[in-house]
Amino acid sequence: MKIVILDEFEFEDTGSEEFLVIALARSNQYSNLMGFFEATAQEEWFDPESKFDCGNGVEFKEYPYSSTVRRYLKEFIGRAPDSKANVVSLHGEWDEQDLLIEEPGTFIRYYWQTSA
Image (cartoon, rainbow, N blue to C red):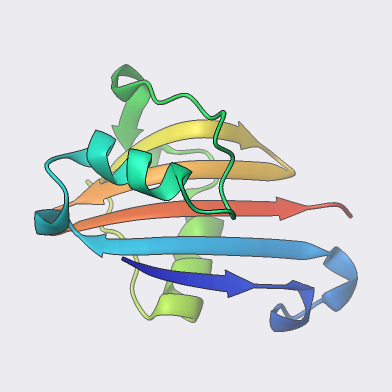
């Protein structure tokens, strides 16, 4: 698993007080998305109290903040999920998003927040 951590100085507007953590793994490293979720929950950057409900997944294109998620993933890890990737929202508000993204061959956990 690779983890990328970005503080507010990595974003265009440092006054936005954004913070982003991206965990990325090949899907063959874990038995399923739940296994990846459990591995990321052990990392200090993610909330260990987050609950995973695979039943609330949607296609990436249907996720309300997908355009921003796509832009940041493309900018910071050089790739973005296709529109049919599966997204499970662990927390999804305008100021904080914690997502699990599954696409063929890849698992991504995306945690973004702003205090602006």
